[in-house]
Length: 118
Figure (cartoon, rainbow, N blue to C red):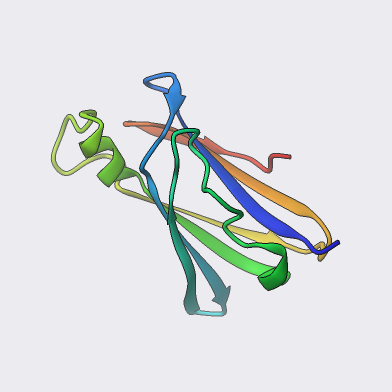
């Protein structure tokens, strides 16, 4: 079985999944970034398919960009300009070619956290 990558965004301020949040995935090599895909979260706060499916999975360094500012504005949570959080980059490595990597984002207007999920 080949590895794959998923993500999940939860709006901790509102206590619900973050629907309609745009996410971009980049492959990182040195100082270069190559965009692989851009997706949007569904009603469950997840993408409809793995953000990096088995057929295109490769180990290496990646970066997810979460467009939190757009989501916060659309959900009425943008309380200042400029926003404290706008785009949230998370750079991480994937070393196991057969693993399921899951990178969740717990989001509020003034903070976030992430971890390697399952």
